[in-house]
Length: 459
Image 1: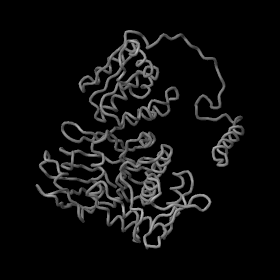
Image 2: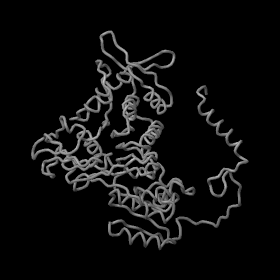
Image 3: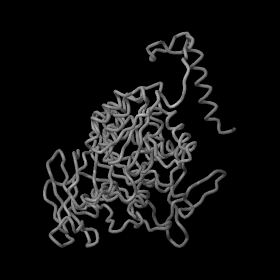
């Protein structure tokens, strides 16, 4: 297993930065490391480091324009594994590299631009051939011909695992094969309904990308998988299904993804030990900042917060991908009503509020701690007037890092009347875990009817 990677001197990495990788422990997503952050922050550069490591004993090099002058015009990538430390290093002022240390583990790397030439020649590569001959990406616009060779290999061999996973993600089986034109060129043929088909040139980019990703996921647990922006060209529902497959894979395997999609960020993975790291640019170059166990514990508590299940919903998870500058509020009403107040005052509302609130004043500091770990420099908070103690604790904890808080001159954002709800019976006991046995039959039938209805393709 790979414990960490460090990079210095490659593109924006002016100073040495390190990434700690998630370690699989048998739980879904435990081996998943997710890289987030704004465009141009250095995520793709970091995942490309793994491609360079995979080329350590072949043709790994760093051309002049990719070496950072502030790092002494040298590149150094260090890998810590269970077998020890290895380092890929250029000579001063030169592009060629030397690897020192134990052989790096097998690395299956996929760049973000996943495409192949629609027509190709016959060349069959086993998975081991691919791993021993990883593609050399001197630029980010190369076709993935070696991945095409993998499709040829799958077509000639047993593609059951590949086809089943691809079908689960797409929501239906994909009938495909490798066919040949009269001029001798080969292509991927997709069979549609009523016997109709189209060739590689008519394949959607999302399907092409998925075929490469699924092939990567069908490997063994001793390989490191690295996929840059797996969500590209995929519908949000397919992104979520892909994430489901990734969570299963990373029960016992290490996988790194770089993403701009909240749909690819799993709270279950974080709670189970997965890693989230924000990669961003500052005056000192590219930075890597990571979450900690305290943040995992807080996120775990939000998953089971029935009163505020949206604390880390899609809107809130978008904060991982945003530029610096957020204001945290206590609740969802605040996120909705503060812009209303600003509008009534004749002010333009350009303030980015965090998600739909923190689920209460007590959660504001926990969210601020998470954002601080991820390297955010400008984070503020608004407290209701009756939460003075929480306000003062926030100021004491975060004033040194430059975070700021405000407290409003009223007890709440709006007038509220006392509300007492009448008692009600429910499906669950008070422990919220036990289904009342008298409802078993009805609920089983209801959920079965729902599934049949949603899976009825005749409608």
